[in-house]
Length: 361
Image: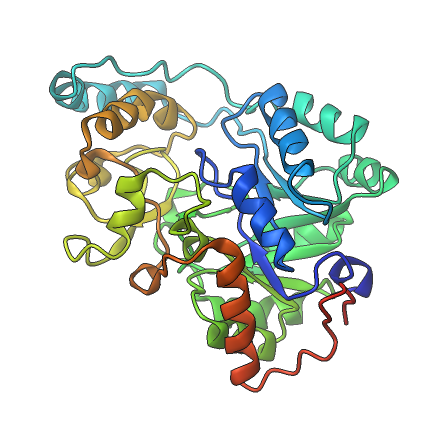
């Protein structure tokens, strides 16, 4: 990775931006203070909500941090398929004594308004999920002094990231928890994801951009493995989800190591886009029938998920988690960064290019 970017954070550890209230300022701030790169997730928030979190984070740390944006989604969903799925979910609505959400309440996640905020009051790093920003957007962020990262799940997507002028690519393996950051939602490619180590190697050969590796990483030894494979840093989500600073619901945190939830699957059940979560009742019963319709299905199921959380029912929640979820540690986020760095050192990784003062390699 270019030294200009790694100068922003002392250790090669990035806290993944987890939307839905998980990546709160307290979590990002703790990671930044410990020498990682903390991230806020703007997904499903208003532009003002994002701005308020940025202000709060700036009050918690003077270190650089990142903000993640969702790319606007095209009109590809079949309304009739969404209607059929809504009919299938009627029993869930009755069970939780709530109404289904409006599937037509927005597809762009306030993208333009959020960009305007980030250009008016720049942050050190911005990352993009679900697609590639235009060259003009990337150039405008560069003029504001912001580094730009974009998620890719294939070598072809990584080439598109490089063409955009972005500074680095986040190579997201199929092991990753939460939504796969595919640029195009194609149901024919469901369950055709590439494992992280293979993906890092392929992306390294496809583009000259620095690579941040993401997907199922829970230990310092795994970070060492992706660095050895050619990545410049590792992005961890599920590992930070269990920390006390995380904004995840207590049921979600407990489920990571609960023996009732033994595995994860990619599913469209909760959002209409492939996302990896712990297999629970809702996922088993509705996953096979969920249409390719994001964010329509996300809006549709939002009241169900909220009602399930209120009822204390983990079987109705979207329990996003990577394949390494059983290795979650309930450590404070800053301490977790310290443990990961110690494990990296124990694995024989040369960290001389990184210093506690922030110098990159």
